[in-house]
Length: 189
Figure 1 (cartoon, rainbow, N blue to C red):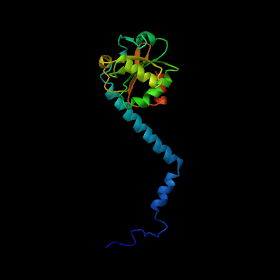
Figure 2 (cartoon, one colour):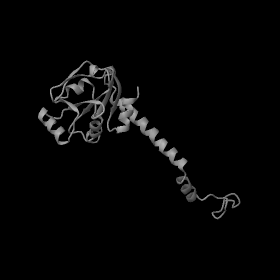
Figure 3 (cartoon, rainbow, N blue to C red):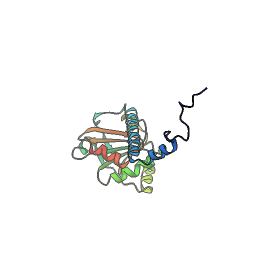
Figure 4 (spheres, rainbow, N blue to C red):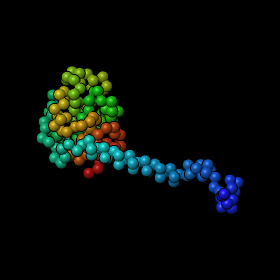
């Protein structure tokens, strides 16, 4: 049988009330900061691991020598275009659900940075141009109707964003990203 002198009674003032302990913890800003920091760290580690996994077959270092032709007929050499300012290379598709969230951010970014997008397996030239018009998207777009350019670059998922600075690939991210995430990749060395 249990010895009553060794177990605290529920009405004993020395016994902490688990409900009030939980409530006071939730009101403590330090506790919230620790929780938020933990979530941010976990999210960052998972994101970096996914980016590494998705981009493992992609080129790194010097950008592959590729001359791209946009829907408007302009030609772009990524190595040359990235000499004075970073270039955001955006692989996406009209059928990609995650691209619907990322494309507005990339389009917003195109007001301040050079953006070249690659529309992968999204149909013929007219279909892609119509999609861009109907969604009021203004960045330069290359139509990769057969997905050959995406295969050359080792793209495993859309959206994929590659940051090119001075002819070198400096960052790669896949999946949904935010404006601060993109800006950080552009600003960091």
